[in-house]
Length: 391
Image 1: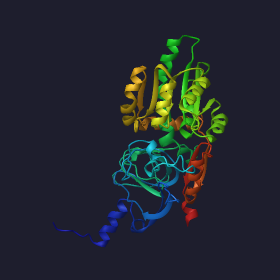
Image 2 (image 1 turned 90 degrees about the vertical axis):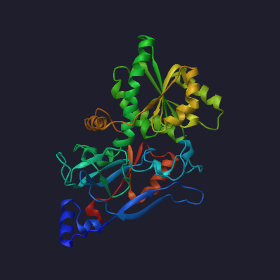
Image 3 (image 1 turned 90 degrees about the horizontal axis):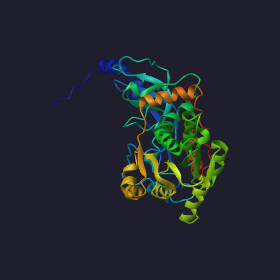
Image 4 (image 1 turned 180 degrees about the horizontal axis):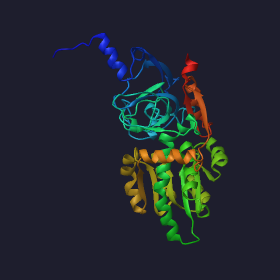
């Protein structure tokens, strides 16, 4: 098959039309890679350079300003076989909560529109607009200065009163928490209806990270007039989580200290919650946490977990749950319109974002170490420099 070469002049014209200049195509941009720490690999953050991504014909290229350190299994590219989430935990105390690199792909991205494709079609977006990127299937790593988005529909413009670091928390963790609470709403109403006017609905949140912090704030928005009848409790997975839960969540806290026997932890949890709970929202979703939470559920209780790792857990614990009439419910990630709604609710102050700590991209090692020790109150956000600062 013949190979056709375009004259240099024509090639330059085509590149300019698509938003790619010859200078851009030759440019190298910074990228951060977060790998799994092992006994041989102590440093798990690597900074390197990669070619500037091309501008998709129907999409746009985004200059990344902030990217949240997030925890999703979608589009896992590791060559190792991932069977369950807990299999990804590392053994050393420092990196207890650090998981495989596929869980840190940079799905929470906020930045500015750098270039748009010539086939982008009608859109309200303009060059320089501040946007977040909906984490669509095939989302490229966000820990880079620039990313290419195939369709402009995946870009959501953020209001002027919202910082890019706050916006970077929304596309993955906050959206998942919002969808989970929204799905829990019907179950809460059902429990309250069955228990009568004086009855309460007991909810157990497993985990004290950014997801739980978001879930608490979103729950207060969804149930403003029923707070007295909804008893929310938090199970801390680390000692450091207690202070975070008490200071920022202001709820009942039970520590899941792994030094205790399993039956002691179950009894401690029931005592803290005032008896078996009606609903469990498990943001960690390991085999151990699922097994423990099921023993804390009242008959007919409901457990909500992410759909991304629910298949294996449901097949493993489905029979056990059925014996007590428990429901294991997978929660889908969340839609583009739900993310738009979340942006509006946060920008108007109806939902208060949790605290976050900003680290420059070259401080990623420090950020990950602090996440591993559980000493970051809320979320860790990486930040790439402004163009002017780079120059």
